Image: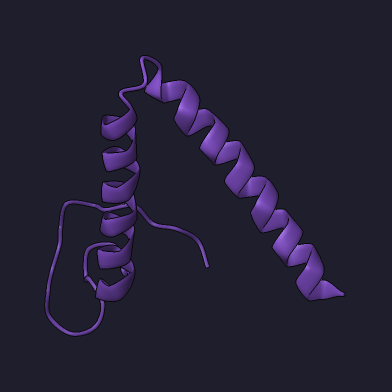
Length: 73
């Protein structure tokens, strides 16, 4: 499944947003995840939040690749 970001045409009817096609559950969980990351950045007051997010991105993608590889075994 491809990720489709918000298109600013949000709907709350049914199980899926008619704007982006994502489930309302996925949208809610994504918002919560972003909130946690922002709270972490705020709590620790990093001078370079871009660097933290860059490292988080790399580590997340590496871990995802590892999980996919383990699943294929």
